[in-house]
Length: 481
Ligand code: C2O
Ligand code: CU
Image 1: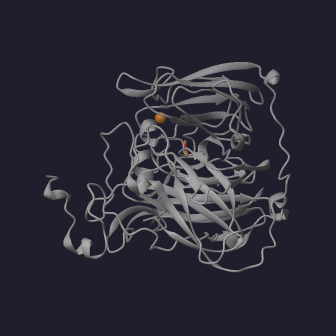
Image 2: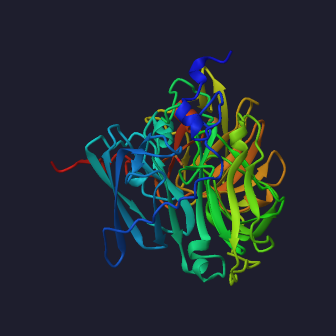
Image 3: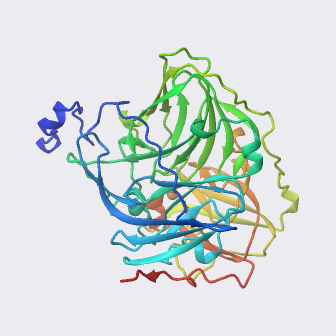
């Protein structure tokens, strides 16, 4: 018989939890979708908004009736959303009171090396660091922990939040705005019977949860009007990728990728989103009558351990009638394709499992080794390959955005034809990307965004130009006593 340790406490069964071999499974679609609050600056001047975020532990209710310890940004997970205008600078003071060394990376921002959340540039407990972000393009980004060899645990425990930059061009388009522009942070978790997160540092494959959280709530429900909504979807899971689809079989309309709006909307029935990726979608609820329930489902992907719970993500309940003044322009933003003939070099990066660890070109992380030196402003083609069927690797590069030229000799998927900073390297895939390296000099990391792979040890660094700031040159400072 399945051991009695698997039996759920009676109190939980009474609260409607199903008996399973894994995490306590709450009733689906009971909890309302929470929205992370937008963070107010502590002060502003002509050019800059100053924010403050404290990392600390907190006890919260995620599974109804149970308490979970989280590692939080300002006491919540996901942390507060920072919303900023393009070309206004942000200075964010991250205060470390979480009891373990941390480093904060703003994923998607071309920050100077010393503000990029370099994995070795740790904020010790009791210290703080002011990170400076230029906000030089409009996109959906996220900030998350990047501490060397502990990123997976720290992100899993809760250290992740959304960061959205908007510009005049985007705000001038008739797309859904305000309350109709909604972030969706998707994560999978494992829980003990008493509600604690389970994280196993010795499992180097990855972490596959059996409960799906959206914006920190399990299988939530969102009440919508019968109109269009814009969703900014972030996969902030450690190791799980998703193939998103609506239960009605209707289209998802993709308008944005990691690097912001695409040139034109792309319709798709399903959308693959790897860890670290962002896609912006329009869902048009206007064809559904009041009372309709529509599921955002996960159709699953190879090498993702699927559970019953991981097939369902979120339910939209169409509850009210509203007039919709928004529309989806056929042209969103101009997009200059980078042409292969402009590349001055081609490099190859192989992602594989060897010697009991995850490697890039046969190596693990070494802060004293730089694996590529690229002239500032040069265009290069990078081939990203894997030679095994054992895993997929969403590969992320700091500093620059790229375009996908080819995926296993085929053109990229239609919804991948925008600016990207993560590319899903599937089993046996062979990908060619092209990028112009900049906007500034410095050493930056690249790694698999399966954060468990990243920690063990699928991460390296490249250097653009020369004379860039040392990533360790703006160390954290102790908090005043
Ligand atoms: Cu989202 Cu180097 O990370
Ligand atoms: Cu990987």
